[in-house]
View (cartoon, rainbow, N blue to C red):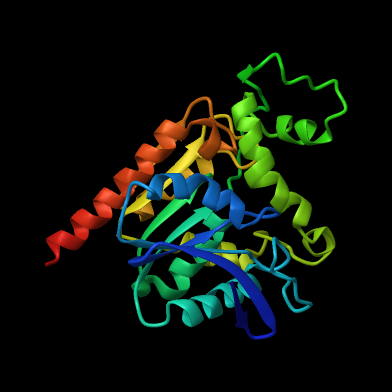
Length: 274
């Protein structure tokens, strides 16, 4: 489906009915990463309308010349929210840079957001990230072959099995290949915006939150996400061993259980207010 936000035709997919969950993917991928990890969980949960958008310059949503920084990206997301869920509170699920954008939405419209799920959020940290490592690799995944997609996978994998590689090829790699690399490399600065970072550091959010990080995530680490805890009094924070930036696919049982726990805590909070 397409919804025009100003001059940008934003592509999105929608599943289920009920309370809206806006699902925001990370940099350089698209909505398929989020459907790939969340839809299997929500086949077991009723009452939620999952909305998966492609950010500008990624997936099926084109870039625009005026988008240069996270504030510009948030303008598009906020416009999309006002178009698709204009008169109701909603939830957010954000992965990697999508988790950082979720912080911006909390800053801008906290009163409308009832809960947040952050998966490997790209939160700045002044220290070092974990050292690059592969804890387990199946013998049949031969990095010396001619499979360039496998080499891309192994650059990020912590647990490398044929099953996880298949998920990567079906849910992550298509977004990487569809991304507007000129836009991402030369125009959009991503999360590196001092004003945006300062706003994010002043957020206090007291609604059910789940923050999941990979202990071996050498891309964004976990220490920056940990620093959110004092400002998120209703947060569950988990650092998963044997998980990197593909956490949602590398440790499916724990990922699914934490998402279910987040939903349980959301519903518990709603019931207590009746």
